[in-house]
Image (cartoon, rainbow, N blue to C red; front, side, top):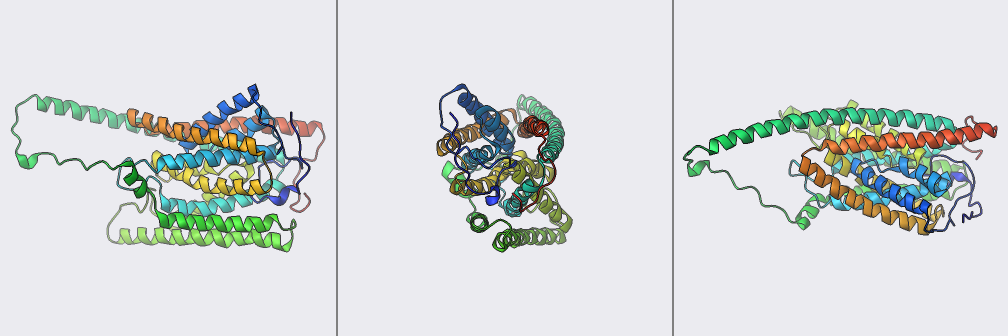
Length: 437
């Protein structure tokens, strides 16, 4: 049985709100009952969380339509619950990744430089996306998201194919070397002690790996940004729509985000420039690019775009961040770990805000968060084992591409159906005003 609460307050209260604003009611009293709908939602939620976190995209594009079509939540509540699921899956994935070594060098599996570069712009973009979701008509948001998702999905798919071919060549070369080594071992050759191979470095314990992967300075800066945005969102939510206080809280988010981004960007540019002057072409961080002002501007724009899409869709912004990290040369394992780490901050901020606004039923939120926590952990576990066994990190990119493509299809179905209903009811389908909500 579905029950509706009374209207809380105008839909503009949430600075990190959902994609489509359709009515003034929230299904925050819907009961959690055992039925085919809840079972199907559990299965879809588990698979979406598992594959979404492995690909580093979260899965909001799957969760929102699933909660809307299968369970029957309105789009506001579906987006809020989607944030809970993304938070749970991201948190468990981060915990798993912190106990995993870097696949190719002595460095943390999470790139904190890139996290500090993208997280502030991503959270600022989410605020912009939420404001645009109030103004943009439903059909336009649907079309923009489908075009963007199909583009990023196609780009990721072709990148996965390219990486698969490169991995195949590497495996063939390794096999040739092993065959040559076997032939050499068949002959009696005396090897001096000075030519004996060096012992491999001792393996680290899980605790040593965990402590090595944690960088407290980077985490504290990210937490400072998180707390600043939360404080400004609370002020904004308690202010009247379009009042001076409302716009002040909105505008203050820009210097917060830009100051942290500028600080990290200056560090990357300075260190990269110094290395080039001394003839050192080693990359400053995991991204295999030279940090020029143009590249930094591109990353800032891409972070804003990812956050804007997250604000429109009700996701964590990983649909842009995941492919972007791959585009600038980050290896799939690190790209996945870094993207989920950043999404954990953006989604948890939204969950706290939605909780105070009573935007979701607590039993459903706890249950779906638990499902996502389990899915995020076991998804990382099995896919990482599969990547290690097959020696093909391109599997992660194939999963990322598939999740984005599936999100484009589901959002297209939901958006198309809703637009047709609005046409049949002769509803207004043009641009709206910020203040007339």
